[in-house]
Each structure stands twice: as structure tokens, then as C-alpha cells.
Image (cartoon, rainbow, N blue to C red; front, top):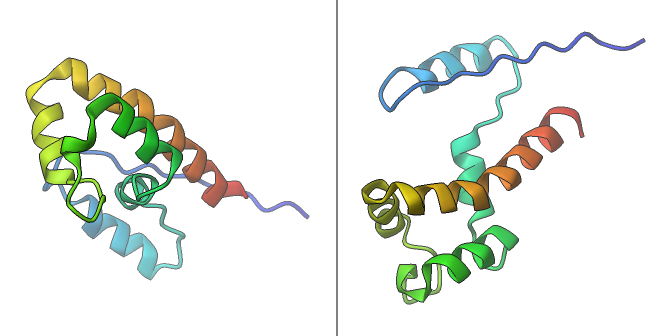
Amino acid sequence: MMQNKKVIWLTGGSGTGKSKVAGMFAQRGCKIIDADKISHKILERGTPAYKETLKKFGEEILFTDKEINRRLLGSIIFQNPDKRAILNEITHKYIRDEIIRQSFG
């Protein structure tokens, strides 16, 4: 028999309580898929998103250990909407695919 799954998306700006509400759902046995955590994971060294990001932003966004300096990358994209759109174009497809994989795979 197929189970009925419900998907609830929590969205909102920084400091709006998403983590608190997600924690409440988790306490009730709900599976939580955290897009912020996924976004960190997909940009780890060697991943396709990492490689695409380096092609577009250059090695100056790296720490000496070759990991992406997320704070520096963030300052670049928040100052330039065109660069933010480029990063979103790179990362969103990988984030979406991982959310789907975790939800249904």
C-alpha cells in the first residue's frame, strides 16, 4: 500500500524561525531536509558544483586548502546581482536534485 506523503516547505529570511519550526516537526517524527546544509555539501571540493563555481568565479574564492571561502563568495554575490544569478544557476539544480533524492529516493 502506498503511503500518503505530505511535503511542507519552510521558507523565510534569516532569523525568521525556520530552524525552530523544523525542530518542532522533527520532534514529531517528521523527516527534515535542510536546503542550507545541502548547499554546503554540494560545494565541497571536487563536486560538480564546486568545479562549475571555480570556472565562473576563479581560484581567488578558495582558502589555501582549496575549499571555497563561503564568506568571501557570499560578499561577492551579495554585492553583485549578476554574480548572484550565476551562482544560483550553478547551485540550484544540484540542490533541487538532492532534495528530490532525499524526499523520494
